[in-house]
Image (tube, rainbow, N blue to C red; front, side, top):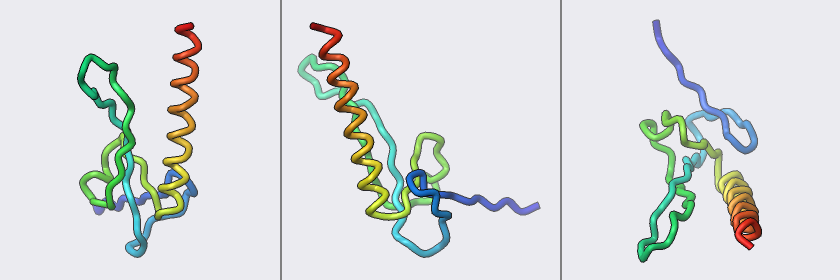
Amino acid sequence: MAWTESYHCDVCNTPRNDAGDWWLAWTEDVSPGGGESKQPMLRLTPWTPVLSQSMEVKHLCGARCAQTMMDRWMGAAARADTAATSSND
């Protein structure tokens, strides 16, 4: 029995075919050092079959959807930072 994987863009739901400029994105927590708390980081890389199978990875069909995802991620991070700051006051 053959197994076929299919992918769709996590922003616009476009199905992936062999053509196109697809990207993968995921988030990590990074420790900047100096006693500072961990910071969220968005990572973006060109499509690779091995990374595309990771559960944490978002599949993006091109620059526009990559930018849309980055904009959404930055907005969510800013809201989280604002909420954390106001709860500490």
